[in-house]
Image (cartoon, rainbow, N blue to C red; front, side, top):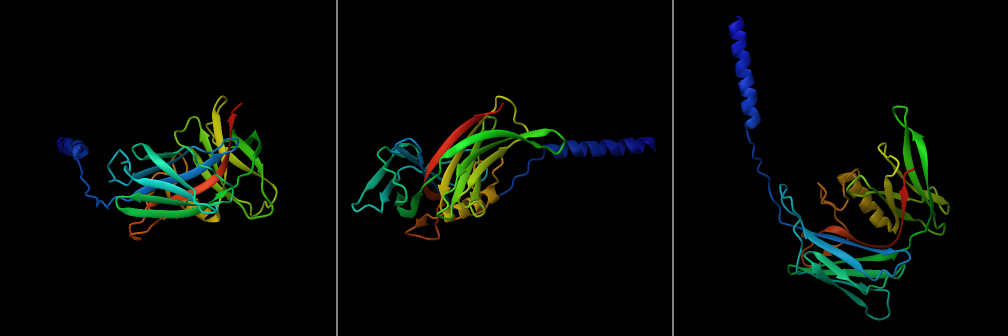
Length: 277
């Protein structure tokens, strides 16, 4: 009986070792590549805002470790609010990276993005949104689940009470590769002091939190809410291709079914930095 049991154990062990060595190939359907457009025009407070960058790439298959740049495109932005036609051309400086050095940002003006790529034209319009000044920041402690206190960093700004506002807040932990984002509204804080907050139970003295604030449109707020819900903001970049399709405001003028991924957005941006004590 002992020999039979030992024989069975040896068979199971051998099967386990062999199964660990099996390679399973999963055939995944590969869709036609889509154009991915990262067109966020951000005017840093206190700067001229004349240098702006738009990045173009294409989707690729699941197992690829590289993001293919979209090269050879024609990229321009027009100020639709101007009495005269003002066109800002973006020149490709490196593969997939298009730069304009003479952009003139004007708050509340309407701008139109035009991209011609692979024989098709993509367009979108959006307004350049104002952003409040970040007034101050602070570090406080809150109770954690295990009884230990957790560090949180808040940065404060005053909402414009004359209108409904939406904000994109960001925070970059010096220990994490990508920034994290969240969307907030002034629905319950009309005209009052508001704040963005960053919490991490692993924060320690000397860690640096770089934070940002942008005023955004309601449509972009809805887009970012969905994008963050799909992709997740904890440790990931919201500008990575999400696992589900999410359309932005950029429309293919030649073939609506061949829509791009991404969003055309313009706003002021205010930033700050806090070192954990």
